[in-house]
Structure formats: structure tokens, C-alpha cells
Amino acid sequence: MMKTLKLFLAFSLMVAVATSCGDNKSEKTETTETTSTLEEPTEVPTEAAVLEIHGTDEMKFDKSVFTVKAGQEVQLTLKHVGTMSKDAMGHNWVLLQQGTDVASFGAEAAGAKDADYIPASQSDKVIAHTKLLGGGESDTITFTAPTEKGSYTFICSFPGHFGMMKGEFIVE
Ligand code: ZN
Image (cartoon, rainbow, N blue to C red):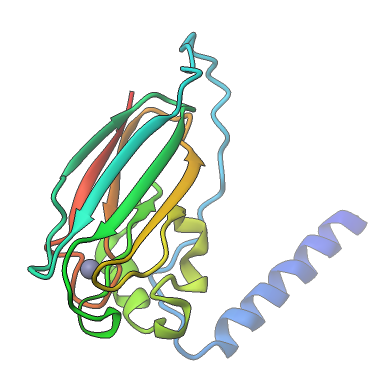
């Protein structure tokens, strides 16, 4: 009985929060995180996958596909090999969870300049990301690849870039 009441209260609170939040998208659905219990006999390599990708003044990444092993440590370096400033031609590398609507993520990101275009409202969609870079800069990040095999999408979340600056991150 108490539990039902608590759930009801929690739900009411969520509704209240959702309705009081003016810019809340109606199509935004609350997805329950289901942890995969499938234990596949995949050997996780002990060596990290060392990846490097460049962003250019032509609004392009020089790579469109990466392949890593499930659960592998990844060391990724993003280099902005152009000369344009971060404000005009900033680049980052953002790896998104599967099922993320890239267009709506990009739209939210465009409004998050103060957060270097990594919108806090979408933080559950981000597996890993670099800093936002201007020409000549680079950033190296390390993270653990998802344990769930499949194809993930990476983008640059600078406004207007994800159409051109996008690729596939394959976990096998
Ligand atoms: Zn970019």
C-alpha cells in the first residue's frame, strides 16, 4: 500500500516537473535502462584500442568508421587540423547511445553553447565525448567501449555539423 502511494507520488511529481517545463518535447519518452544479462563469451582485449580522428576547416572528419571490441578500453584522440576558431568551426567527437535520435540530439546540442554543445538534458545519450576544439588543438579521451555489440553513431555536435560530421562506431 505504502509503495503504491509512493509510486503515485513520484509519478505525480514527474508529471508536475514535465508540465512545468515549457520546452519539454512531447515525443521525449522515458526509456527504462535494461541491463543486458546475456553473458557472451567475448574476450575483452587487454590492450586499449588507440584511435585518432581529425576534424577539418571543411567541416569533415577524416574517418567514418571505427571498430572496437565489446568492453575494450578505448583511447581516442581528436585533432582539429584546421586553423579556424572554435567559435566559427569548432569540433568535438561525441559517441551516442544506440537508439538516439541524432537530429533531436543535434537540435538540443545547438542550444547548449555554454556546455560546449553537450546538452545536460541529453547526458544519458552520451557514452563519451571530447572537448570542443578550435584549429590546431587536440584532445585525448579514454573510455570503455559499450559491452553491447552493435553500431553506434558518433558526431560533432557543433551546430549544423552533425549532418556532415558523423560516423559509425562498431562494437563487435
Ligand atoms: Zn564540427
